[in-house]
Amino acid sequence: MTSFSIVILNWNGLTHLQECLQSVHETNYPSMDIILADNGSTDESLAWVKQHFPDISILELKKNYFFAGGNNRAVKHCKNDYLIFLNNDVKVDPMWLHSLHTCIVTNPKSQLFQPKILSAKKPTHFEYAGAAGGFIDRYGYPYCRGRIFDLVEEDTGQYDTDESIDWASGAAMVIKKTLFQELHGFDEDFEMHMEEIDLCWRARDIGHTITYCHNAKVYHIGGGSLAQGSYRKIWYNFRNNWYMLIKNLPKHCLFRVLFIRYLLDVIALKRALLTGKFSEAKAIFSAHLSLVKEMPNLLHKRSLNTPIHSKMTIDVLGTNTAFKRPFLVWEFFFKKNTTFSEIQERQVKVND
Image 1 (cartoon, rainbow, N blue to C red):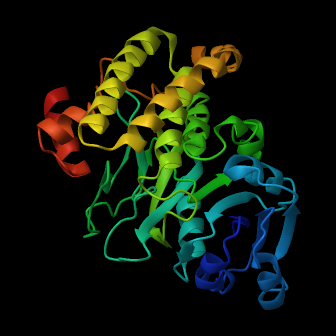
Image 2 (image 1 turned 90 degrees about the vertical axis):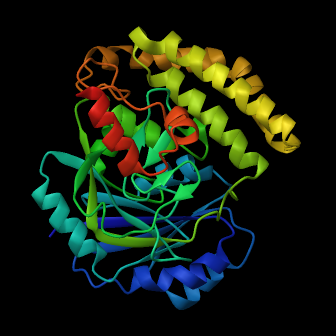
């Protein structure tokens, strides 16, 4: 059986742990362990876990290293072949690890996977953070099978096939430990949000495929660290998306994509101002401003990635002539294609 080390990152998440940890702990699978990595919590999280789940290993970090840093430090204490990064607000199906094992065995070319992520609040629907696997449009906007922007689909079995995807959600990411180490883990400059997309991009650059496993199900509450629509969520959305693109875009499309993204961000800022969303506008402006002082570090990281770009076997943004990725803003807001299936169907027609 595939062996799994389940890493659950926690920061003041007592309420989520009380609701979700039991389901993970009760998983009936012969080769697994659970590591709770605590980012310097000041609530009663650790005391509660020690009292109720004394067999769970606890890594007590002295401060908040955010998602990327906390998980990176936890991996050093993992002994099994596969890592599972699981948010502390995720419940799991009893057979989720058996299904993941089957998916791994039947997809030997993949070392990176994602289960089906459903909403814990509304289990008939997908959940925002990952749904049925992540993709990236031609200008770097992340979206999912089952979620376009903020619109989440009902799960009616429309994505019940194992498929290759662009990125796996950090809410429930499965990756072979040796691959994670080869990639030097998550980029800690991201802190939290989109660091998993950056990791997946780098994995694809060196020839790895990422697989969505439809039979493995987890249920995500969502918004535990960053509430949807909050200032920090918006700030990380814009800042880290640019960070990811500058680091990883191939040279032949770098300036074109960044120029169009800049224009689209200006439109987003003006729209926020005109609709009275001044906090959102401030977050967008601040995110762009922060990139100015971070640019030397970004360019340095990009220079380290240059040899990888020359080996790229999969063009993440699909700028080759065989397949052109959708322009998500155009499809969603102007063409009114609001589901992954509708957008995919239209792109097949366009590419044909």
